Image (cartoon, rainbow, N blue to C red; front, side, top):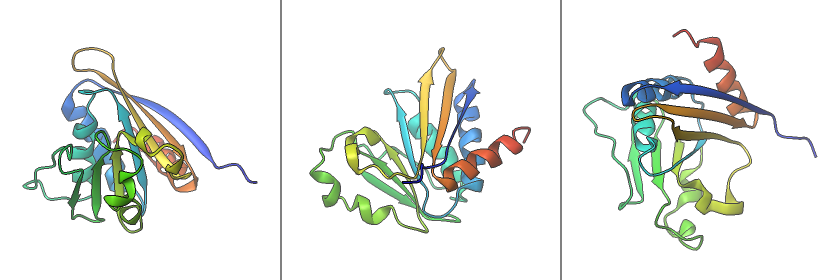
Amino acid sequence: MTPIPYLQISLTSDSPDATRQIAARIGRRVPPGMVLAIEGDLGSGKTCFVQGLARGLGVPPEVYVTSPSYTLVNSYEGRLPLHHVDLYRLTDADLDDIGLYDLMTPPAVTAIEWPERMAQDRPAEILEVGLVVTAVAHRRLTLAGYGLAAVNLIKALKKTDGE
């Protein structure tokens, strides 16, 4: 079996706006069908990250991007459709019920908070985004790309780091 391409980088953010800007850079480059697994403790900036991702995907600024903690899935129209999924309150049995696997198909981009709830059903090709609080407004973002599309996305971000 051929190993899946892998690449990882770490970025720092010193404000919620900086986190949104990093995510917007990703959104401008993300290919159709990309699944992002967004991991971090409560209050680490997962929804803030998705807000920036939505702007980078061309979701209009007047559309307020919120956490789908109670609705489970929020969908937004942009350059590519964006599905923002929060699995915090779900069990494995509920994943089919919310249509998660149907959402994770091109051309849509799917951003999943609390992806550990997917266990073994996590896609092999994925962009993992880890957010860690390092100080009051500071975050360390670790991007780990699994699969060619995710690796190429990280490479594109590295090339334009001065953006």
